[in-house]
Structures are given as C-alpha cells and as structure tokens.
Amino acid sequence: MTRTSEIQSQRQLVSQTLENRKRVVKFANQVASGVKAALPSDTVDGGTIARYKQTLERIDSYTTTIQRTKSLMTFQDDVLSQANDLLIRAKEIAQQGANESVNSVARQHLAEEVYQIRDHMASLANSTYQGRFVYGGVDDDDPPYDVSSYAEPASGGASKRYVFDAELGTGTARTLAVTDDLSISITTPADQVFGTAIESLERLGRALGGYKTTPASGAPDGGGAAYTFPSEYDQQTADILSTINQLNDARDNDILPERVSVGGRLRRLETGESLLALTKNSALEVLSRIQDADETESAANLAQAQTALQASYSVTAKVLRMTILDYI
Image 1 (cartoon, one colour):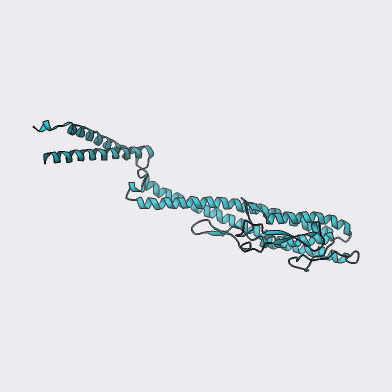
Image 2 (image 1 turned 90 degrees about the vertical axis):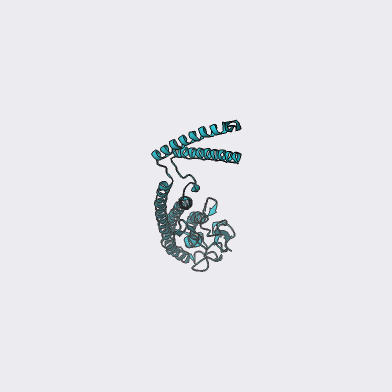
C-alpha cells in the first residue's frame, strides 16, 4: 500500500510540474506576442473568436473582389470614352460627306476612315480584360461580335459586316456579390452598348462607299446593291444624312448612359468598400478586447508561473531521490 501511495504521489508531482511548465510557456507567449488567446481553445470566448475570424476572412475576400471589380469598371469607362470619341468623329465625317459639293469619288475616300472607325468600334465591343470578353455576358470566353459579310461588294471595307453572337449567355448581364448585402451588375451585353453604333457606322461607311444597305432601318441583313450614279446621287446623300441621327442615337441613348451607369456602379463599389472597412475595424476591435493580453498582468502571471515551476522542480527532485532506505 505504501509503495502504491508513493508512486501516486510521484505521478501527481510530475503532472503538476508539467502543468506548471505549460503555464510558463503560455504566459511567456503572451508577453512575447501580446495575445492572450492565440487559439479559440485558449479562452471561453473561442466560439466568438472563430466567428469573428470567419467574418474577417469574408471581408478580406469581398475587399479583394471589389478592388478587382473597380479596375474592371475603370477599364470599361476608358472603352466607352473611346467609343464616344469615335462617334463624334464619325458624325463629323457624315456631315462632311452629306455636302452635295462632295462627289462620289471623294465620298469613297471618306468611307475608308469610317471603315476603320467601324472596325475600332467592333474591337471595343470585343474588348477583353484579364482574358475574358468584357461585353460577352456570361459567355465571356467567346467574342460577342463575329465577322460576316455583305452580298455586295465581294471585298473591301464595305463588304465586312459585324453580327452580334446570339449564343446562350451572350445577352445576359453578369452580376457579382461584393458584400453580404450588395450585388451589382458588372457588365452589359455588347449589343445593348455598341449595337446601334456598329450598325450606323456600317450604314455610313457603305453609303459613302457607294452601296445601299437593307433594310432601310434597324440591323443590316447583309443586303444592299450599289448606287447608280448620277441618278441615285441624291439618294446616297439622303442615306448619309440619315446615319447622322443614328449616330446621335447611339451616342445619346447607348454609350453615354452606359458610361453614367458605370460611374454609378463605381460609386456603389466605393461605398461597399467603405462599409467593409468599417465592419472590419469593428471586428478587429472586438477581437482585440478578447484576444489581446494586458502586458502588466501577463508579466505578473509569468513570474508566478515561473516561481511555481521552480518549486515543483525542487519538490519533485527531492521526492524522486528518495529510496526505500528512507523508510526503514
């Protein structure tokens, strides 16, 4: 019985020594790091700490998403600025070409610049950002505008035709959750932004180049014969003039409103980013109250734990040196 009690006592002393060592390590870490609850298991508030850490991770993820989306919005604003400038230049050419003092040959020269403007506008509609087609809707791995052709002429700038890709998803705007409570549309389908612009530029280029476009209004269908000069010179002039209204519609009803919309979405992103920052600061403040150690208290606890450990070492050493002769 005596030996059993002695072994139990020794085990208790060793266990207490190990516990005191854990306390020394714990308080030493608190003094070094300034954190009293590095792990949720270090405190009764572990569940609260875990929830706040999850919140912080979610906030950081949303913040990264917002920053990337703001860059995308800025890119779109630049694209729309270029589109606006192109339409302004195209209108100047149309007004110049509609002057009846300009003959059909001179109009053909003006058409060449319009074809370049039309191609540039189509390239803007097919813009890519980080490898994805910005205006391709949810089908953003495929360009929204494909190149086709008119029946007449067989070659040259007037023969080229841009057709909106009607595949599933191309006409669907992409939306993105940027906070728990805020989702925004980050893109607009290409036909809603550039459709009228491309159509009017094609009509203008073909009219200046000497070709009609069918139907008389709306999306071109790929048809249209050459004008017969001089009898159809007046009709050519009228067709050129009609494109001016279409160019104005494209600018006033599509490009400029989309640019305003992009600006509004940018402001919403900035507001969301500010709210996330406030939420993050609040969460960090709560975590600080739960986790951060009091420097003076931690130092005092460390000193007490070190004293207790040294005492445990002394007592344990004395007991473990005892032999059965000490009891005879």
